[in-house]
Image: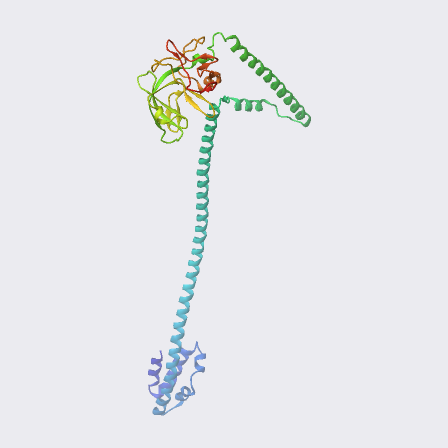
Length: 383
């Protein structure tokens, strides 16, 4: 732009004034403030007739114009930079807003995941607790069964009957009617309870009368129901998991010996347990003792201070039956633990003053061979 001005200024003097003024007006007309910074030499060069003087003054004007051109270029560059900065700032604001939205979404997602994990953890813990409760219920039921507590099954239709009863009860429509219906319901419930009590008493009386009437048919609970035999302890060793127990292999006249677990470690030395004749109760239900199943029980004279194994008569062999005069009958194959037969008979088993084993004073006898006795313990219980 300014190169054109300089070229026009160097023309002939006749045309320099008009041309120069025209271009100055065109170029600087919209920006009259730029004319204020022009030195007085620019105005003087327009009036000079001498070419040399004009060139001298024109050199000063050109320097001023060069300064202005640099200033304008810098201003234009600064404006471009500012516009770019504004654009970048707007873009940065958009990015920040987007990041804020993403951060909020991530926080919500993290909270949701944490709540889901906690819910899953609680469900697992609830399931474990339910299993533990069920296991404890089963253990309680088994313990009650072992202790002879009868288990009464809850009828499946009780909840339905109560629900149907509640549905059949008419809903009161007024305050007086509601109070009357409540009194009627209470009266009906009391009458039902009284009837149930009377029925239960009648059932109990019938149950008591039935055993008395049928006692002639039912098998009596006495020593004849016990399968007592002569046995030979072939071998004995200490229990691997219990210091007070022996594990024995006993011949009771069957095809194979039975495994028997006895708590005799504190009373009988191990060497005296080998190849020893004994009396065994063979129809108890097999029971696991510290991991080993015991299939019979060694009969002993017992007191709090001392225990002795009952010895069969001389000449008895494994499998010989122990009988009791006056108590005929065949023993049961296996005693029912729920009926507590052994627990009812055991209190009547004792040794007499001659150390002979007896049931209600009747000796333990092997027919044709003699009676069973303890070594030294007289008037002691037998277990």
